[in-house]
Image (cartoon, rainbow over the protein chains, first blue to last red):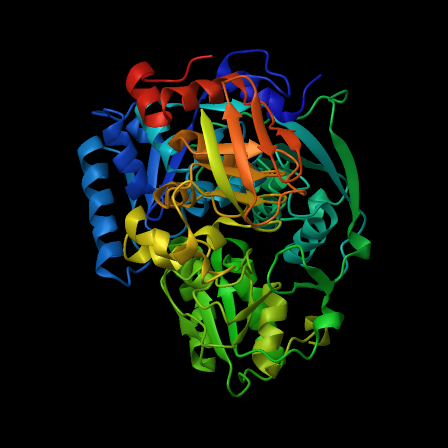
Length: 416
Length: 167
């Protein structure tokens, strides 16, 4: 009787793995970003690395510095290009998107084990796989050996139940869960989702929910496979699919239920993602920068929802509001170009950037001015996160961000 | 390992962006430079007051947020050999071990700024004594593979020797 985590790690380690065991696993995918890979390449050399064990499983993405804004970050890109070329790994370029978004769109498949030197690698768990974040040294060791070691986590079963009210987004559900579990509520554990509300959640919704699991310190965040997963995988149908379901008698460290009918639009106040309130309590807060994008709010439906609200509200940005748009990947960007979404946003006055992490962690793109209030679709609002310690970052859904862009204040998007 | 250290105390949920801001990584990854900005988001004056041999003492969930390993290496570059926290976020804990930074998980609530702590670690027992309070705190034991990596001197020497992980 096993959880999804125990099953995947059993297969990948070739053992009968149980929660609490330490196992050595072969990783199906090994991700490096331009922020984590330069150190990983150094570690790899120091380890005596001369060849990458399985270069086809290694993917580097130029996402944090997209495009590079300093000579040093441009040099990081060159270093990664040289390493990838020498060792024959996969390499995705500036503007191609966020590492685990690219992996989700094109390569990852149910049953896989993904490790990535980016904490938000957990996002991929939406595709019924085990994905976890590591640092640069573990990335180097995985490149060298093809392996990583993992403690098999206990799992928390999260049942998503009930009808999803109109105007409630995946971000609102995820923030509700972060507030419920707290910033270390899932430490050393995996979240495994279940419940009758799953058919109401698209894969793009699930990616958002899995993403924010790391703000509860979850090691992985896994959805079961269903028809929505199958439809998502059809875009790249050559992926081998080994769906993994939990056994009915699997043991969980905790079980909780989120009743979607009780979820409403939420905002995380500065300076912590679990500082969550119903949007009514933050309504009226002046906002000078709105950021829609990143790995929590930068997918096609996010921009469609935002555009619908902007259009419903007359399509004019409030005076003094800067609206910054960053698609999560080039695929997202191209689809938004094709359907006219980006043209309409540009005509309204939005700043549209290259795909990637954008302004989220102050590494590329717009940095807020002193004292600015920012409303962002991102996942972290730590002080100084966007590159200015005097700015205040509020987190909300793309819909709430669009509403604030219209009014210049935090505004309940259900008004539109 | 025996350390006599001055406690530098911080609160709960010190994330890795607070340890070192991502924006600082745009110009260098050199710890000798980055250590000037250690914990600047929490206390801009802190970095200038660090003395080699100081230890960081924090509350719950130290190292949450980004998995960036420079958060561990910049602490070491500042001459800080160990971090005590009531709990650690898992990626920071792992990164610390991999670089030879000793993470000591124990109830830190009785430690105050400037306490002179004695840390004793023989591979099995991890103890922190605080003469001011007379207390001896016991750190959580490391899992065997982490102990092996730490005793090897970090993941680099471990991988140089083994070329892979072994249990």
